[in-house]
Image 1 (cartoon, rainbow, N blue to C red):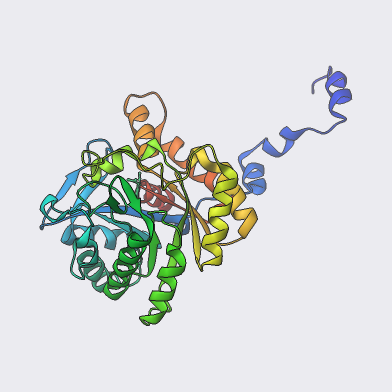
Image 2 (tube, rainbow, N blue to C red; image 1 turned 90 degrees about the horizontal axis):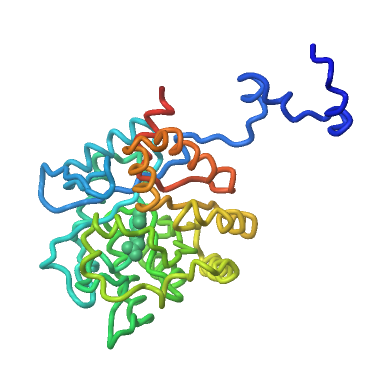
Length: 336
Ligand code: PBG
């Protein structure tokens, strides 16, 4: 028994927050948010060839895989209970051109991966990114003409790429190029092609962020990129603009919304979830992953704990799930 508590009792009026934190069992009882395997979407990088598993230098623990190896990895993900994956191709340089024409190819790398994964692992959701950056010789998400990324022509191409992805068996199309009008155009085209059950996860608020660096290494677009993406991605300074952008995607028929990057944009996660109520996902992007890995490899932070904390914080900020390169590590940790 402490005897000199009256001063604190006078100040707190006997309201003591620490009572609920006093033991593991009370802490578990009052915990408001939880991370489960159902919250995870695993982004993976695909390369041509077979038998290939090659590390991405700036993302320790992340590999680029050929389709056969990706199939094996995705089987493991499904066994761990991960509901969905998101695929990104690193195609041959020789196939990249001004307009990203390989994006339309029914048998391109991404569509090959979808077919193989769908066949071998039918119970996992496949989310395919639709943008032209993996396919263009200049690293931009759209068609580049006289220094401008032209909107409407890009949308026409994106729509065709989306149909090819749906034909290959993609469950959810995730347009990431931030062209105006793309969600509506893709929805109409999917429906017209008989793909009513294929969903759209809009990269509703995609910011012009410096956190995408390691991803551009992973799909080899970093060295190609001419200029920046400021004319189509959102300025990191703008929250209201992000809400307006999201409102349009919702109106045009998005089934799910994404906020990207993740941690520096938790306010946007909260506003999007509160404002629209749609299933909302954060993309913990490559640079966020690299930061945690680098500090952890230096022994400066406890990487596993920081990983879990960041993902739990997305839940608290209103997210229904997270695209994260940590997905397999987290699923394994949660299974223990
Ligand atoms: C572009 C796209 C990007 C990412 C996924 N799709 C950004 C870019 O390179 O501009 C980034 C993902 C990450 O950083 O993890 N279509």
